[in-house]
Image 1 (cartoon, rainbow, N blue to C red):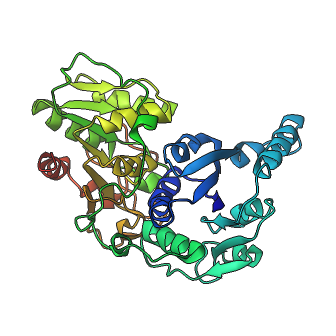
Image 2 (image 1 turned 120 degrees about the horizontal axis):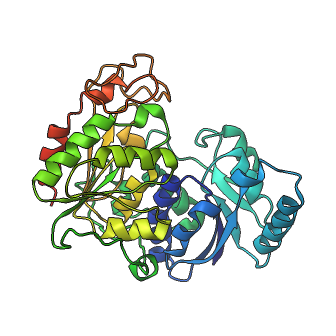
Length: 365
């Protein structure tokens, strides 16, 4: 059986799909997937042995110049690549109008979420077969349920887990081939490799998902004073500047060079522990089975929190959290912040002190 899978973005959503691919491959060893994914995340599906072809798409880039000659040429090549082989069916695991539109470009029946289940309900009108999956469940479980219903196999017992990760029996649910992932070298520093490594995943999207910079610096100081090797990755100019401020004059705290996704995977795989906000790299750490503490303020850990048996989540107890807002109506600057974000830090996150976070991290080794 050959299935075309459409799950284009984001990083966390792509990682969330991997356990479903593992379920299908275990239930039906002959099943093979081709995967349509945004070009920025194309490395991830290739790390799973049940994925035969990765078909990159560049909707995020093409939309800026939709009528340019290069865009039209790349779109034509994408269509040819999409229809180079025959599929038993297409599975749209995203439930968006754009993903349903892409799925319809393949010459095969399309399965997807029904009107009650899809993130954008109108997307369901494009599917030949529609499947109901309750919205109130974690994203990983929802995707595993969709695959089981569409492909036709019993949902594994481990897929029925709900909670903070401690009850997850299958540590290899993501099914990643580490030999494919970790072909690159991690960045060397002057700190002995034997020292415990703490990776701080400080970058995220919404302003309300950012833990105060002063808190990151306080956590880095506590870890460094305890003899840990603290490592700060970054992916943009803004994140690089923040990483430099966090590390300033702190021995044992290192700002990494800008790394590709495979390089970041290598860093995470060698980490003793990670601390993350609600960010795609936190989900990648979970896929690598790295002990990770994820911090939540405005978003809900129950629906999209890092998923895995060595994952911990720490959510604020602020009265209005989780508000699911990109901007906070109660912004207040964290006292002592070295460079407060525009408009100040969300007060729900200022309540999660670095000392509290460090106490949890120490027990995750």
